[in-house]
Length: 83
Image 1 (cartoon, rainbow, N blue to C red):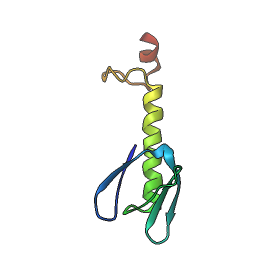
Image 2 (cartoon, rainbow, N blue to C red):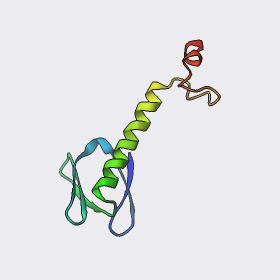
Image 3 (cartoon, rainbow, N blue to C red):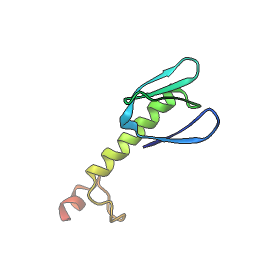
Image 4 (tube, rainbow, N blue to C red):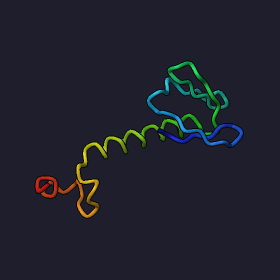
């Protein structure tokens, strides 16, 4: 999920997996796979960056079984093998 802002400054939480396309002409229009469209204050590039960051977070969390132990890092192979 990503947070965007409607033109009236009301926050909007969107399922990033449902975004079909984003237009920046001149207002940013986000179109969902279900046919809904809405205008947001963020630029098309900002929307894309939010989706990328969201997907990175999901991928990082899915690859790190050590999330429950903040003292260990996923980048330490020995720590992963010891678990």
